[in-house]
Image (cartoon, rainbow, N blue to C red):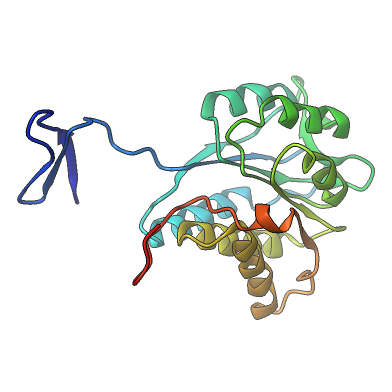
Length: 229
């Protein structure tokens, strides 16, 4: 593995064996993806650990170009500090959703609690700096996605209910696409295509709310053969 060490600021970068010496002394930061997830009491448990694992494997298989952060068992009071602490380029929520309110989490006493849709969109209005995409990988979140899209370039939500396995397959293919340098729009289509390949009936449930130019944004900038970025 390549080692990054403090360089010679006078004579420039050098390569010694497998060591790359950089004048800046800082390793370039990888784009950050924050996954916030929560099972809620009284609902069928979701395979959130499996989703974390599959997404992590997909990113590592692409060369680990994304800094994946996990905030598990997220309560209502954790949303603000999680976003402020990690400052993600992509903010992802996994868990239950309801037709009336969208995403669900728990309160301080562990009771299930709907996240007020207006308050959630306002949170992303306040903390939208650096955000390119929000993913609401939960049932009945298309309406929330459309409101959040007023402040964030790309937002993914689910139209109606979605099977747990389908949600995991979609997210895995989506983040694999981002890790390989695909645009957000292409990564979204790869996620939906994976649902079709796997024979899921939920292939039309994921919805991307974004303008044409916003869908062309990338999270990972990766040079391709015969081109310069």
